Image (cartoon, rainbow, N blue to C red; front, side, top):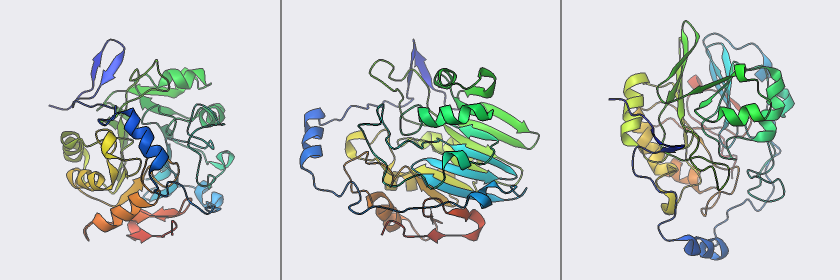
Length: 329
């Protein structure tokens, strides 16, 4: 039986028992924040990185698979003649305030005004590092389609997106963009909320893009969830591109983020495929050194894993094979 999200009253719950509270307590977290010495932010300025706006605006070939990582979980995907944007975040800080909170390590490599026409904007959940109000308000007048988990549409409508441009889904819902192109919302293990009073009032999800030539998985945010990854892989694998989070991980919240090792385990359960790691190298959201996720991923990945490690803004052709830009060095 396919996994389904749990809901009671106005709240969603994970299928597996999942706590977002640190087992060691918040006092211990504060102590680590104050006294641990990892290089959580780059000591030297990064970039500037520049995407090729002209190349990204060109017509998408009908059999192409390209990806341009713009930082964190924001990716411009070109799949079988269609173009999509995942979790668009352009603000300087992933926070309720642009005065406080995690600040970008580098400026977005593509100005928001230069984002080319899109066939869809895919949202995984409503946390600030994945759902950027300013970016949504800027994108809203363009008239493109937004695809999001249940409940997230209320944010979008409040920020100016027309109701007819929003499709809200639960896990395993299919959206037919054409006879031979589907979007499918798939499970994840995480949580949601943008304040103290709305925790878990909206759903979280991952996404499958199923085109006539290629299949792509956008994992969003998720902790270890073996049954879900197995089901997704069995239903829609093998994938031509897998995008999974590797950063902002820690034993204190091991149930809600994968980290490099669990991302590789999930990758195997999904059936493999070229792996583009997300959710690292852009914001200080954890206690680990900012380079640690990618360094550990490279160390732990076996020769059978095709790693795609482009510089921010670098448009990569997935079929070209492994890529290691080493931009973080």
